[in-house]
Length: 92
Image (cartoon, rainbow, N blue to C red; front, side, top):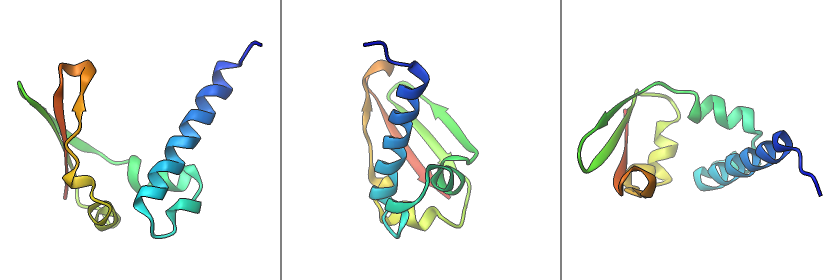
């Protein structure tokens, strides 16, 4: 069965937006992908890299308190394909 790559990527992205919306809560579990993108993903940030971690510092935005309440600032995942560096989000 031949699968169209565009369709497969679209379905994967849609699922990831749905997962992000469920983690944020506050009605975003039912939000459309473009709404989640506009409120949370489409943001500028400064990225700092050092030997052991990656720091992503987002500007102040109206929706940052929702990300804080969902615990995104407390996440420190290791990124295997970047040598196990830890990823840190700093919100406003």
